[in-house]
Image 1 (cartoon, rainbow, N blue to C red):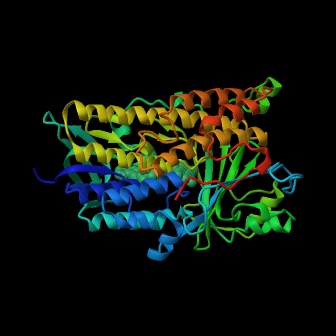
Image 2: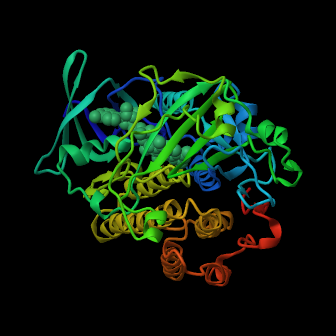
Length: 498
Ligand SMILES: Cc1cc2nc3c(=O)[nH]c(=O)nc-3n(C[C@H](O)[C@H](O)[C@H](O)COP(=O)(O)OP(=O)(O)OC[C@H]3O[C@@H](n4cnc5c(N)ncnc54)[C@H](O)[C@@H]3O)c2cc1C
């Protein structure tokens, strides 16, 4: 059969390219299809310890040393200084109030810093996706992956023999490809789910948010702003600019991620669900959704307005991007040999920067399924496990993220919601650190942790509940990082990683 490959990968984002490279390295014939061309603007940039650990694991297991090099700030700078990225030592959160300069009477009252990596050398990174994705794509092509860029996929059929036929349209007309496997790595486009009319499960997702974002030049330094405002930054475990900055606002938050090429990613995410914590307290709710705020419009938040005063939009070319509701969910299993990456099956929310790790974990798990290709019961079990892990992870994340939004206007409550997430993430990091390969991320396979997280979220969602001691005591079995310790004033320097 002409144009026949073992695996057709739909989507040449970082995940599709890494998957294709590892498959090619393992001797399989792979075609990588994308409707666009590189370089292109992409959002979803802040990496995490979990993402970096999986990247290293993939690099080692499939002899792709460039993945290991991209897994820490210093090795990235040494080996690929031409690819832009940002230094990320951790996660930082600051609560702002309308018409007020950022301030806190006591350290930690309106700020939280959680360390992700112990020093600058082993720091995580923000990926300047336009360049990282292009680099990873080129590497896969160098390894023999057949590139089909500029191909818009139109139809997928499965023959009686089990072989798939994929039809796409490109500049020169129509193209046909045959494959034994399909992996959908098309991210939010969810191409194969759309083409096969898969059941939409988005109504089961509690998180309801939308976002606006863009890349800017000349965004002011938050670290410098804090010093100008007289804040004691000496006790911070890392520089506030070397972080995924979260600035909490009324009804949402703003991210600021600085790259080392003078460009900064700025985006504003808003809750659009029918119920906010404030409304729950007052006993009323409103479905009225205000017009969407732009990421550079902060006239009502003076400290942020100063940061953005000199900023100018550089990308995307068509201007600031605005989404409708971000969330979508379908089952990742479209057939025993037709699977979707977690990030093609679900978009949740940027709040805990979980997308890159989830995509990479999916790559790791699918490689295991496709390369071992045992067939029969063993393969069916692995595929089933893939779907089970995905749904359990998605449910846990959705619970934690939606609760954090509902708690957002009460900083202490929001912090407690984050602590439950960080406990799960750190436990999972520790398992990777010990050389294990957990079937789930974020401790979602630990039923006791999942049950506790559910109870904690319930307590946090009830306005007058005393959640503090419940969470502090309940978290103990997983709290290796000393979270919820009032003595440290919301400065957590512990890290499991590297
Ligand atoms: C606003 C926002 C902020 C985020 N921030 C973070 C963050 O800070 N950290 C984090 O870890 N995650 C974040 N995420 C999640 C992250 O963006 C995704 O997890 C990540 O981009 C998924 O990568 P991917 O390679 O799976 O898919 P993508 O990067 O989306 O790549 C998909 C590819 O498929 C191609 N494609 C689309 N349609 C078709 C078609 N019809 N035919 C062929 N090809 C097609 C596209 O052109 C694209 O190249 C964020 C998400 C959003 C929406």
